[in-house]
Each structure stands twice: as C-alpha cells, then as structure tokens.
Length: 104
Image 1 (cartoon, one colour):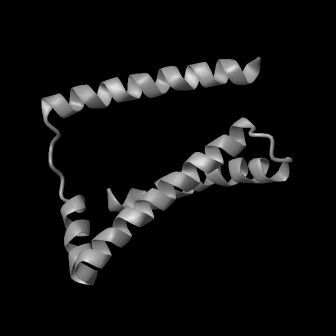
Image 2 (spheres, one colour; image 1 turned 90 degrees about the vertical axis):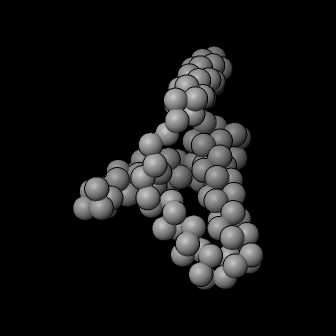
C-alpha cells in the first residue's frame, strides 16, 4: 500500500490544483469551485488544529504514538459501517441538491 501512496497524492493534486486555480482566477462570487476551496481549507485547518492539540498535550512523543495508532489497521464494527454508509448517502444527496441549485 505504501508504494501506491504517491499515486494517490498525484491524483489528489491533479484534482485540487486546477480547482483552486479556477476558484482564485474568478471574482469572488461563491462559485462551486470557490465553495469547495473553502471547505477544503477548513478541513485542513481543523486537521492541523487537532494535531496541534495532540502535540500541545504530549509533545512529539504523543504525536508519534497517535500517528502509529492511526497506521494500524483495525476492522470497523458493523454499526460503524452502517453509519458510514448512511453518512455517504447523505453526502451524495447533498451534492446532488447542490449541483441542481448550481445549474439553475
């Protein structure tokens, strides 16, 4: 799995970079690309904030411990899988609604 990570990062960059360029090239009128850019930036800020909190609580040792715990595979429980499916259904429906509103 580790060998293929560069490919995942490459695909993500090929998706995010043109979207960010389109979002920043236009005047700010809350286009779809601009909205996605804000959501992406907020997600990155929240993630960085969570890791900062871990670091402030225990320094580098606790960050290393948390990172190693995240790397270990633990199969999800059945209830988690069910909630995960429901969340993705809601996200898909929200995206359909957003796309329909965007096209009108």
